[in-house]
Structures are given as C-alpha cells and as structure tokens.
Image 1 (cartoon, helix red, strand yellow):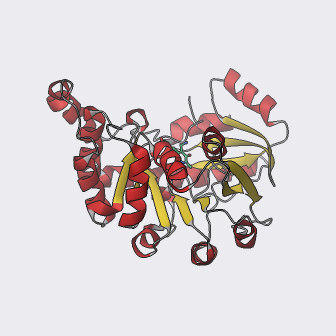
Image 2: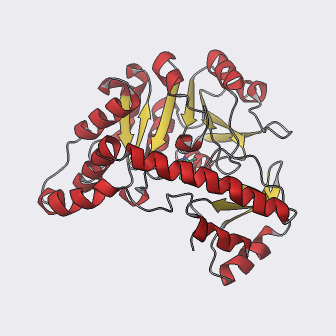
Amino acid sequence: MDLSDNTNLFGAPPSADRVLREEGFLKLSRYPGGYAPDLKRAVARYAGVAVENVTTGCGSDDVIDCALRAFLEPGDVVAFPDPTFVMVPMFARLSALKPVPVPLRAGSDLDLDVEGLLATGAKLIYVCTPNNPTGTVASRAALERLVDQARGVVLIDQAYVEFTRGGDFLDLARTRPNVLVTRTMSKAFGLAGLRVGWGVGAPSLVAEVEKARGPYKHTTLGEAVAVSALTEDVPWMEACAAEAVENRERLRGGLRALGLEPLPSEGNFLLVPVPEARRVGEALRERNVNVRVFEGLTGVGDALRIGCGPWPLMSSALK
Ligand code: PMP
C-alpha cells in the first residue's frame, strides 16, 4: 500500500485508456509540438485564461525549476516558507541560487510570515498552498499582502488546489503582473506517470519562463492524455477529490482517537506529528503500508505524511 506520494489512489482518469488504445501507437512515431500547443489550449480553456497566459513543463517540478532559472541569476536568493516542498531548495542549489527558508508562523494555522519573507529581499518568493508537507493553507490576506509588497515574482504552487475549500489563487495569476501559479496533472488528475504540469501568469511573465523552458518537454502520449483528461475527466477528478477529502477527515478522526493530532489539511494527505517517526514508519512498512517519514521538520518535529484516497487502502494505516 503506497500512501507516500500524494498521488490519486483511485487511479488514472477514464479517458486515458481510450486515448492510449486508439491513438497511442500512431502518435509514437511523431514529435509533439515543440511548445505543447494542444496542451496549452486545453489548459487555457480549463483555467479560463488565454493561451498566452500558459506555460507547461515535464511535471510542475519542471515549471518551478524553469521559473527559478528564468527570474534569478546565480547567487540570487529564493525565499520560501519552511517547511515546504523539498524540491525547491534542491532546484535552487542546482542552479547556484541561495535558498532562504523562512519558518511558517507558529500557531495552529501555520500561515505565512509575510514580513519575514519580504525581509529576505528575494526576487522570487515561492509559496506552496495547500502546503506540502503540512497540508495547511496560506490565508488570502497574507498572500495578497505578499504579492503587493514583493520585490519580484511570487510563485504560488497549487499542486493540491483541487482538494481545498476556496483556496484557489488562479485569480491572482490572472490579475497581478508578478504572480505565477503552478498546477499539476500528477495529483487529483491521476497522471503522475505522464509528467505534465503547467503554470499560469501574465503573458510577459510566461514568456520569460518559456525562454528558460526549451521545446519538447512532453511526449506525444503525455500531451494527448493530459488534453483528454482536462477536457473530459473533470467530473471524475472532482469525484475522486471529494472522496479523498471525506476520507481524509475520517482518517483524522481515527488518528485522534489514537491520541494523535494531525495538522489541519486541505490537501489529499495528513501530516501527523509522531515522536520517532522513522521507527513508526518502518513498523508500518513491515505491515506493507508505505507512508512518508519526516524528521525534525521546523515547528513540527518528527511526522508522518499519509496520502488519502479510497478508504480500504487508508484504513490499513490505522491498524
Ligand atoms: N509541488 C508540490 C507541492 C508537490 O508536492 C509536487 C509533487 N510531489 C510537485 C509540485 C511536483 O509534481 P509534478 O512534478 O509531478 O507535477
């Protein structure tokens, strides 16, 4: 049972099967469009923006990596709340940037430390909401203040937005010149294996990311399936997400009954502080339940992150 990577545990979207069977083989011998024109059109329709507002990449990882390289020079600071998505400091270091973590505010909401992030003077501030691994969300007030006062770009990673109530910040990407929102087909849309992600922002911002992106980021199959999923499988995706959220709250109840206190989450996962998380994680693995172990997270300490999906899979984490 792999509950470690926050993917869609219900599986891949229904249209993927048809596209792969009917078109997959034919598409293999051809190159995709260099800058993913079909995918960009589908994303633009889905997100309610123009094609010029859309960039895409080999997973949203890649969109984030390209954005860091587009807006920053070696030695520049990239600031981000801590804890957050582990790839961000890794990408920063790979591009010779200076990662500067700023602890999330103490307290139960773990909101952004806006002043702390601004004080870094970073030309790019990364914010993940809902945040991986905490599951907590940035408040709109804090995020808008950050966007208004930031010296440069605010990259809002919304890999888990489909699981939130009202935590969607695409409107900021549509209306503010310095906001890039990244999204992925890997989580709610059930297509992690395809490696398709996208970003939305002002055309001038997107044009800069595209310069750092380079052509041919997608396979023909990946692009075709992502297009069909965005066009045909939104109701399926929404039903999976709703069930994952319902089961997340059910799991929270079960864990609290065991005396644990999971963080409030708006993702498809729960972060559960537990002492000696490594040992507990190993004990769960021996029972064939794979969860993500974190040690010494800032403000949290040791914790397990448990992915949520169909209840029969999740209930094994409680046994
Ligand atoms: N952002 C966050 C917060 C994530 O958790 C992940 C995946 N773990 C990603 C981005 C990257 O996802 P992908 O590259 O598959 O789009």
